[in-house]
Length: 201
Image 1 (cartoon, helix red, strand yellow):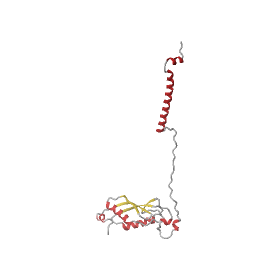
Image 2 (cartoon, rainbow, N blue to C red):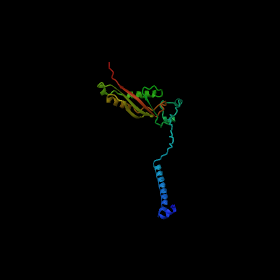
Image 3 (tube, one colour):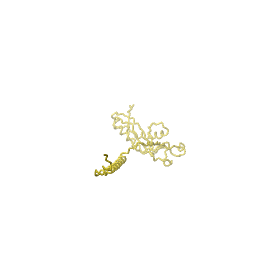
Image 4 (tube, rainbow, N blue to C red):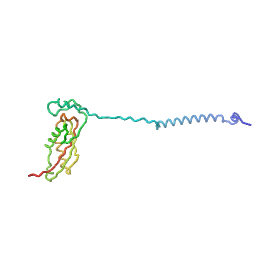
């Protein structure tokens, strides 16, 4: 004789509540798993769609120089930059040598060279000991001709010669203000000091 489902439920105590308990357990398990997935998603995002990176191009533009502005200025070749009405607060700069062929800097480089020559000496100790050498120095001036920095780029074999080159630059400072042809706020100048003994006749 076949036993129906209703008969089994009636004979075995608690079997009717077992199905309901299993359903509730499954729902609770499903809710817990969803909560865990959401927590993992917040801790470690797993977005498969990557956003393209934005790129920016930056250009540094030098303000245009008006060539006619030099002709309009009368008086001395050396002028106060404030009188020109140009913004010199930026730290634009250029590097030249004392023997530059750039027309913008030639006249100013000549003045700097003459000023250095009047302060430069052959150290007596080096002269007496027949010491020769060559020193390359880089120094920086602001628009007012004030010395901002000085350092030896290529030292000689003798410390005395290096120190004399630095001393002569510091002694010659401050230099004249930049002429109107020099449109930078800072000028770096390379100076080559050659110590060479010549035979006296």
